[in-house]
Image 1: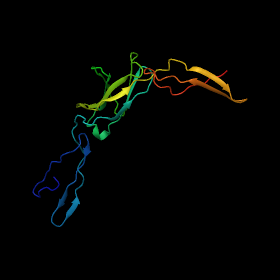
Image 2 (image 1 turned 90 degrees about the vertical axis):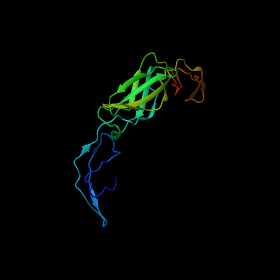
Image 3 (image 1 turned 120 degrees about the horizontal axis):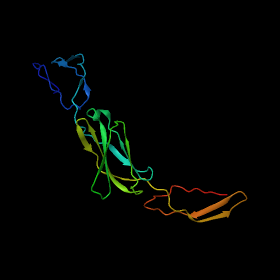
Image 4 (image 1 turned 60 degrees about the vertical axis):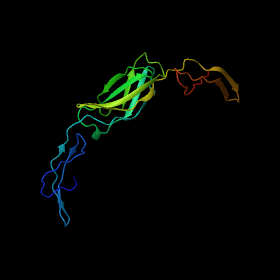
Length: 194
C-alpha cells in the first residue's frame, strides 16, 4: 500500500519480480509533509519461480544442406526468474505430429542448429522456443515456420553464348536456372573463361 496507518510497523510489498534483489526504504509523513527516507534495508532476493516470458523473434533458416537453423532473441536477466535458466527448442516437419525437443543450457544462447542427413533441402518446419530454470519449464513461443538449409544447384545454366563487343570485351549470356523447391533460388553465377 502507498500509505500505511501510523500505528502499523510492517507492510507487505506485492507485485515484485521473482529472483530479483531489492532494497527498501521507509518514509514517514504527516499533515505537514514527508520526512527523510530511512537508510536502505539489506539487499533481499525474492524467491525463484518458473519463467513466464517466452523468447521473441523466432526465426532462422539458411545454414548448410541437412541443417535446420533456429534463432531467437534471448530473454533478459530480470525475466529469467531463477538459476539454471535455459531454452527449450521444439520443432517438427510441417504436417508431422511428433515434436523433436532439445535443451540449450546457455543463458546467452540465441541460436540452435539441428543437423540430420535425412533433412530435405528447403523443407518447412514448425518451430517454437520456450524457457526453463531450476523451478521448471515455462512458456513456449507461438509457432513459426522455418525452412531447412538449401542445397547447391544441381544443374548448369543452359544456352551459354558469347558475343565479341570490342577488342577487349566479350558479352556472355545464358538461360537462368529455374527455381527449384529442393535447391532454392540461385543467388549468383560464376563466369569462367579460358
